[in-house]
Length: 244
Image 1: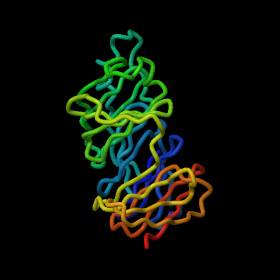
Image 2 (image 1 turned 30 degrees about the horizontal axis):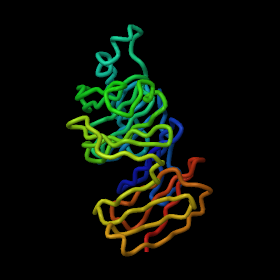
Image 3 (image 1 turned 135 degrees about the vertical axis):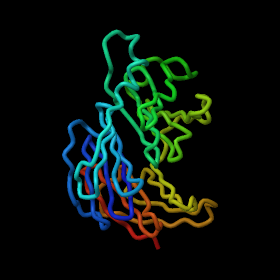
Image 4 (image 1 turned 90 degrees about the horizontal axis):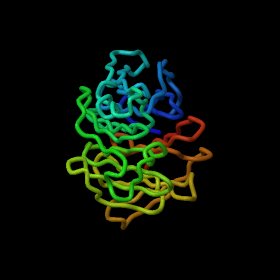
């Protein structure tokens, strides 16, 4: 799932579908996709989506397809040992500028460049605490700067450093749904009492609570100016909440 708040619209990824919304949350269009979309970012004038067939596809703000690039060959060397061809991506996450992609297949975690170059691959049992079959049931989340990747599985998570492949932090409970604004000063968090939204300054000295009209919240994102927050429900609806 992904919610991306850009200057000219909002993009959401849910259930393999890419949707483009107006700045007030109303649905603008649902672009046609050839394969389920795993993630999308909106770093500039175009939306960049990564699909289950390991392709990057560029869309304009009205949903028109502008370009595409197949990256499947970047997965082949990691999966050639299975002898059964290339496995599809089961989870993926793009950095904020869409220059890096974390891709989970059934057996590997790969970091790809947008050019398709395979930067590194991590197989099962290469990190203590991760079993060989973990990737088939995990999700991957790449940090906005593309330097860290968090694997979440079976209610636990582990954050890996991309440069060293070494664990940075671990957790034995699910991480709360959260996002940070562009300035790095505001943190919005959804806890068990969702759809109530908690917004705090990074020093945690000031916290405000906002209510959403949505039945639940599965993703959230600050506007570029931090004055509003978009929230996504499991039914695909988007609400924009004003930050006081």
